[in-house]
Image (cartoon, rainbow over all chains, first blue to last red; front, side, top):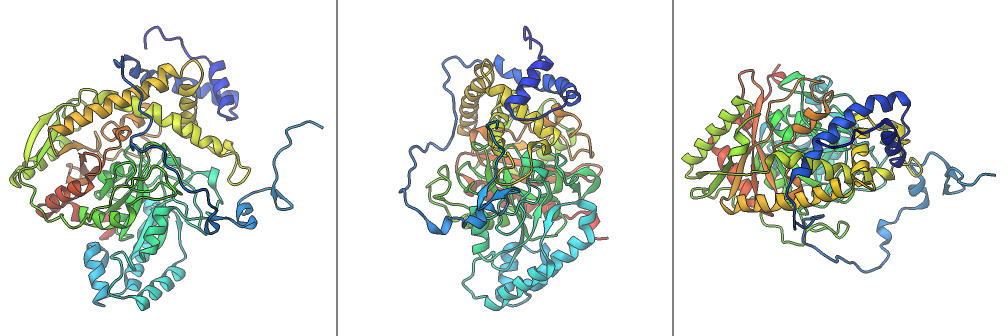
Length: 102
Length: 471
């Protein structure tokens, strides 16, 4: 795309952080040219004439689909079921990394 | 071979006790044991003895009032949650994850009495058109094992084509049912968005994802869709529209219908052998009294970019939940292709780029809907290729991100929500299958299946089997 600023390695690094992906320097370097070519490719949309064209985010035409706020016990997991795939549990809870320092 | 029969023939054979579910199931396992090591179609194959036991139970409990799918073995893409079995989406991120609940479509098929035999290999998270982007190895094409089966529902297509199952349940976001169907010579239906419930299927692009049948014929797809379709309170985007009887009008004559052929689809970039196969099919449609009309989809070339921007944006958001806290492995397990897609989506949604990419693509989506509506106002269905080329060699698409995207050129109209039936229409000189698709107006699956069935009454492409399985 003309007049488009080249994407930098720092930018890709920042994106990886936003996406919660830990990429090594080597991985970032490999990703950069691929990422740039993919962005170039999709930049094609910018030449579409979309003046006065509204956005579409869904095609069902359905709006305000509600249900009664009732508990359906058939759909509830037991505590064991809910924890069955967790790698770390503690006394019936999910164990997560601490977010505060000691 | 029993599995060569249509689902209707199998159902009536079972009711009349000409053969049993047990025999059909054993035939499937026989094929799986003989062929699957060459194809790699599955992520999980269920325990044979357990499945045979289940088949015997079905045989003992059979009544004349059973659903047509009762006692029939099936396979399902590994993106569907299936209680008590692994659901991996072919990614190590979900390695060792055992589903604690069932996807709606899966439970509907189970309640009809069908028997799960395996979960199928795919592109991880649906990210691909070749079933190479995964942690389970590529799915190989039964017509030439040095080629890919297509994707992302590649395992389904390879297994159905080589008769390892009677039918399969797939999922289509940007061609994921139609692409492997056409590359493996089977029939697959991408339904209207909202026709089937998405509940319990691992999402790729939530506003495009559709759950659909894959089988040997349009007639079989009609029967499967009948059980799959309908509103689900657990998926607020599923449609309240009544579900028609999809098999009822299959026999209707199609003379007088108009099929539109977009001139842009038959221009540059299309393999000449695919072009001539579809032109031949158009002539056969004319023999059935169908009118062929040239139409135009001027924006065709923009389709991939629009699809891709919205798709990666939604998938970057959907995949943000995989943090390994409640289930799964950490995010270092995503494949390179998936990382590229997460990164592009994150870019398109990030401050400063949102307007230029995501919002622009959502406007482009509106233009596409208008364009397809206009095209479909001039015809009953659009006749198009599924893929610009036949199945590619292993490694060709996965190592070239741009080619990988362009493989979706004819199937990426999914932002419109329109339904499309992919079906076999010939072979190239080297014996690789060629597919075509019929795109219809919203909720016209019935008509597409009728047209497809009529075509399959006068042709036998869909009955041909890969030489591999005869050996």
